Length: 110
Image 1 (tube, rainbow, N blue to C red):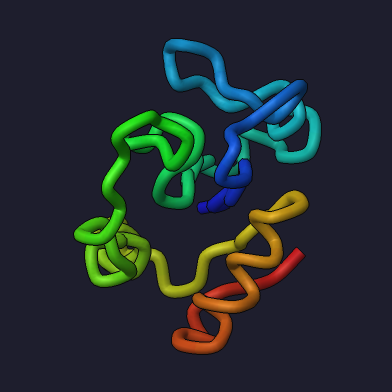
Image 2: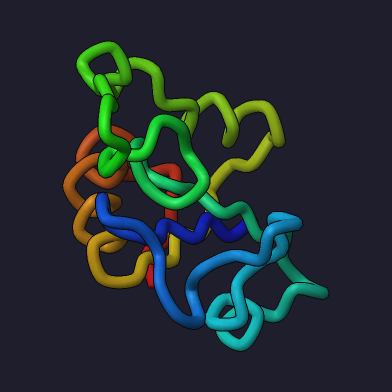
């Protein structure tokens, strides 16, 4: 399983923005052999297709905290011992600052 951590609080642009059907963005499809990996798109809270968007006029993210994230639950649910995390730009920064620090043995970094 490859978890692609993308976007920034202002949203996704260009080849890393997903299609409306939730398919992997062109940038991911060209970087990951989808016949060998299940690709999970992981939007940080307030970006991409997560709700509410940080840029929304009346967005209140005070209750949308780290405790509400499901990354580790997702890994356990799919029985993935170690997943591969692919981050682009802010997604890389976010992944390194959080998951690697708290769950270092459960991921490969690329």
